[in-house]
Length: 149
Image (cartoon, rainbow, N blue to C red; front, side):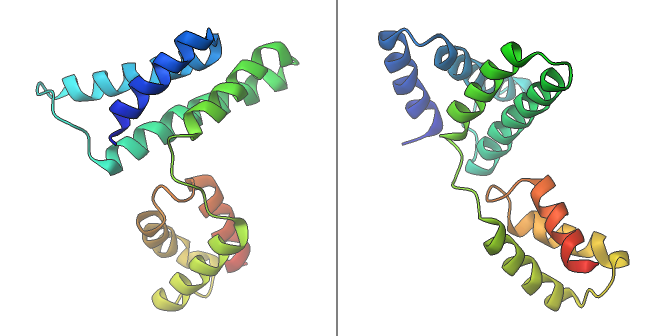
């Protein structure tokens, strides 16, 4: 089932359940998909990779907003953002655990021959491509720094 079909099904369920946060999150995904599709002038289907990038972007936006709200002591505004993250994350592939991530990065480091923090760019390039959709860039970067130091 494509992301759009699954999204429409979840939208109907959220409407029936009168779940305002779920509706807002799902409509944001639908809106972003339509924007990407019509941006190029052609309304073609998104590839799986494009869908994952789009969803990761939406999750990152909400994480950033929630962090800002928490910094400012506005937990009331951060709570809906965190709830939306949970809803959007349902459509993303399961994220790797920290141990799995470090194991894969250690293998990449051996392949590239990375030994110091100067080699971080090489490792990040390969890791980002290989782990796309399985881990976010911040988690990859943190793991690479820990292993290279």
